[in-house]
Length: 281
Image (tube, rainbow, N blue to C red; front, side):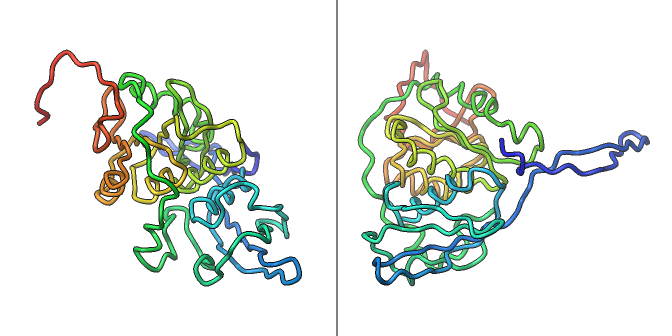
């Protein structure tokens, strides 16, 4: 957990006609301005990309994951280097061999911490081509997924301190492979994708991801961009998230808590051991 991700503020807490004075731990939300340097060696261009609100910490992973989920890069080697140009200003040097369309890729706008799809101008942009179709495997033990919410909770150090962070975790069986937290749920997912891209030993195709929030379209899209075959949400899925998961045959699960969950698509990927089947009402 980054030291810059938590602020401390003096507060008053009212409780049962008693006013307490003390200190509260507050999650930090601050802007990160990102510019991309691209083009041929003899004609490098610097273009504004985005200013986003995020919780400081793992910024390189965040931007790596964002560039990947946006379809700008397909591998870690597409980035030459990261250069800090001041506080909260990051310049990303892209490979000269990487095709880059300024009009198509530059968002050049503000994105708040609750919206990963902000500044997109069309549905076609949101539904950019997923790099590859999901295969039939792997299979997941239905009972293992019951343990995922508690595993996620164990990785939520920032939430435990502030109560203000979303979390995501990549899980294989009943073991966390990688996890990330941020004030924005899509930022947390991008941080996770960045870790996957940077670490060649992580295989997302054989694992599932759990999110502490609802399952939105953007989270399903980001998970699909990395080839993750199953997404589990502690909260509810949206209709568009379900439609996208169904169209790519992704396993989508919602309301995963208290020893149960709902399966919205991709049931065939779950190895279910049941004693009887009843109609859900």
